[in-house]
Length: 337
Ligand code: 13P
Image (cartoon, rainbow, N blue to C red; front, side):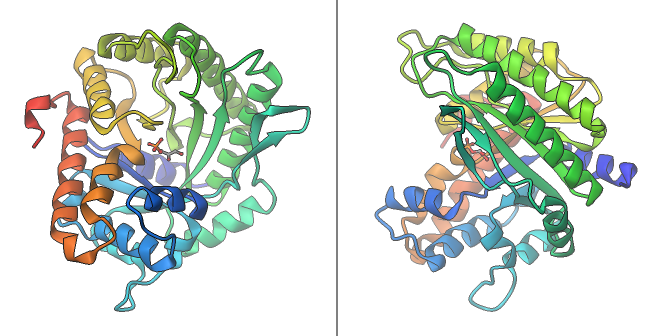
């Protein structure tokens, strides 16, 4: 493990005003996104939309890394370039989702455990040789009747730590993603309690595995109320509770925290990040690693038709720029077009 290089890559990804585009939807999940615009889940559609995002002129001012699904890492454009080469030519780090999805847990089937540790180190070595410089593994924690159990939190944290160690041994910066889901009618306070417990357990396990903290990035959920909760947390409550939760659980050596959007609207995700960066300064950079909150309006602008590329570029550029401003606490809704 070259610690210096890992730390340099992790810090470069969260350089001032920069964040990550999560474009690593699995093929079935990409099918759900394409269905929103009435398009079929073909390889050409997946490639064309993703290529439009990567081809956007100037996106590299706001986006430092893109998480890819395995298919995309080796996929070629119609004129024969590798999609990941487009990113490399702009100085954007290609990343790779390496987990094999969240599956029902054996002794608690309403909860999920993320799989993918078998042969992981060898896969990471191969991904590095294909140009990947960082990786992602997502664990999901569900809030519901009697769940999450301690066993589920511990098992997912342990797998995240083993994944992170394998990545670092192969020179990939691991993005450690424990996601407490928004699904359900739980309050923002419940989300806080479960998130703090989850993040603390994750850092215990990272320490047990000997993971080098300056060479990771944490990708957590924000602390928000459940989507079916009758009392919506307001923007300030989300920002304050999220920061409080992170201060209680994330060691200062971690260089950056890159949030997932998790079902928030594009503007909510931007406003929440901006509010946190406005409230103070922190030992870690607070940035974004959004999927839906960076792609939603660009997907609708594209609408399955490459005749719409110019508006797709403009729409994606705008969303990326708004989130870049949120990293600096410089966003305001008046900047929306
Ligand atoms: P969302 O921002 O759409 O939640 O996606 C981020 C991600 O990578 C989830 O694993």
